[in-house]
Length: 619
Image (cartoon, rainbow, N blue to C red; front, side, top):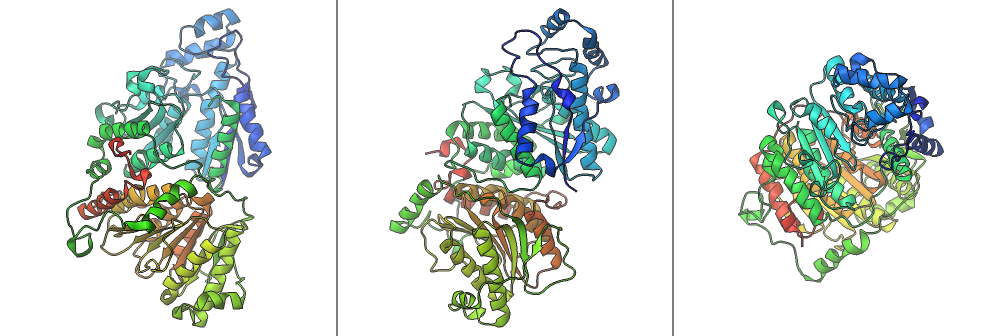
């Protein structure tokens, strides 16, 4: 399966026939500029190209009234003055003799893409359409939108394919009130919109665009609005919204031609499985963003258990079984080392390291071949190793690496890691004997830091402790997920229990691991599944998939050589850009997991701004 690109050149036909400064920005170049950029980047050629079809009037009637469909159909025979008069009856709309045809193509493109994905013909895709749709209402055009393309696609997915849970994420400067109105009482569609609001002073000037509009009737809690009340929101603000609002709910239950074209290219690259580029700028959400996020969380909390659990006050907690000897540890170690480490983010994190696109997306370096291992066709199995003398030099400080099998595995890991650091390979999987897992990880960390990585994130699961002599210089962030102890041993060394429930695991990843990771902004990520890691395949795949959004996708997974080939295969597919498998039925976190998470957040929030979702915590 691949990525579909749905488009039809006829959608450029509709255009403004009279002077109207408000509407002139909606023009054919919105499509042609985006398509030209896709071709320049070689992205269109990598997609399965589908020509859009017209939606039938019956399909339009899934969300629009027959009278409104008839009205738009009649615009095909109207003259210029009649079109202008009819357009004046709606807000920010113009009609053209080609509008009905173009709008049916726009809606049909969405339907075609839904069918292709849900029948397994493609894995994902992008419909490049105009006119747009998210302001379109049951019996009214609005904001350049004629038919509500996304709403029609969602209704079609329900009716034809029997879907019961659909998530619509509406990312636009304007609130998509049309989608909200159409599904506000429908619990089968979760509608999420972040948009410029400015306390109601920005178009469409609607009270129901605010955070406290949460749906009605059976749809209560299935409308989620995140209103931005300040302009200029940055990467940190959007990442915070993802981690603290959108993803918890999702798991539980442009007109500027240059920026538009670039956004389309980045979307298609991501759908194709290419790694995301590193984010720029300091990762600290602004006060206004935190106020909006917290307002939305508060409005949604009565309807979502995950938010109810997370909104426990994040302050140092009373002694519990999650702290050593029943005592809470000190906030963070003091002294010059901590001060030097604390100053590292401001100097290091503002300058993410960029690297060219690698020639190999994913490589797998196993100690012995396994005929049962199934890999995607473009994932290579690496046979080469680092030079023997070099491998032995790195192994010398570790007794567990003296055995031949451990030395062989280390040589393959070093060769793979060098390929990643040199920009030849993007991500990889390496295996090591269980007895040498800790030593191999130690070598990987030191090799990475000494051969080009400026900031290294290590997520270690199981019996893998941080090397005691690893420098506390702010260049490495070590997250241990193991045992029953929650401890913030320093700003850059955190230990948390492995949650026993899927809901707890998701809360840990979204509420702790990812905020720390995005705040740190590594340029290399190591994920080590050591002895006793206790992680099931789908959970390991989800962790790897989410960490792949960091460091330009430069992620190295270290497995025990006796791990199942299924685990290596699923990680290879995820690192190569495929979606992780389902985690199964959703569940909530246990009280113990929630307590451990909130304890650590309380310890770390003053130092890591991405953990914060309450505005009063901003310094």
